[in-house]
Length: 146
Ligand code: DHK
Image (cartoon, rainbow, N blue to C red):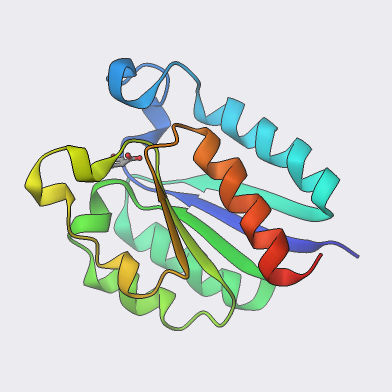
């Protein structure tokens, strides 16, 4: 039976494809979900992609993942830079956690340079566009030995 990977997305990522395409690209979050599902099949991983603009919803899904998922891939959006609560939730999760940023946050405003989530993440991808999600999934397969 394939292991499940929860792919979580934070605020404004529902507008992927429409929002600042020069920074975040033209592909939508549905495109990302489809690409990850296809790659997941190859890697024998079942992917569940979710997005919320609300911090508490992301925290609830992290708690749920404790029972259902082998790993978490997370793009927390702006909560990356502000949310100790999301960090605390991720610290309750035992499997691998990979943090993804579509843009290269280190080439942007200084407030994007710090990540609370990185204190927990086993790996961080930034600046690979939406391809970062697939790269994270490949790394997840390696870490889980699938
Ligand atoms: C997405 C966001 O919404 C920003 O708030 C982060 C991240 C960067 C990204 O590159 O995917 O600062």
